[in-house]
Length: 254
Image (tube, rainbow, N blue to C red; front, side, top):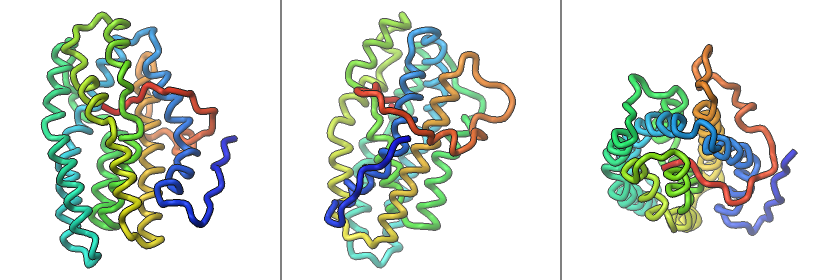
């Protein structure tokens, strides 16, 4: 069983968030390692691209909506958070177009319907932004940015799958662009004078995201894809089981 390290009263909000995520990320990293295992990798990579496209489609509108919701708040720091979301939205713009081009270069095609776990990942954030607090999106982003692809991953996948370099643009660009994004996000989080409840909103959002992302990658890593109940119906406790964290995990979110 993995036990979170103790959090001292003087710990920064980002350190406290990291201690909580330490309970969930080992299972996520194991799912990522299984996703990128060599056998059957070509077919799994196509499934991965098709599944991730709807999540990227949702990214910019979600960031823009969170920025707009900040205008409804009385918090004096809300304009700062809105500006951060708008900057990040511009950085993410058209990445869904890149991914479609990757999918075409790989010989794949879009799914007729989004993966259940993808709908839950994006949908949960829309709910939290609208009905809890737009700061919740920081928890979602922290998990995605913290599991961005490693710089060596695109070349390793290209070698293992035999697919052309054009099939890996999104991973390659994100491996470069996401360098420093997590640090920037955590500085933003630490710089906001949040209440204890608002920090809890961010933590719950992050833990929920880690569990759903684990479900998604476990489903995509299955050969053949699982039949029966929709992938999103996996029990949440199964998605957050404890394991020893694999070092230097390759990352999974583009």
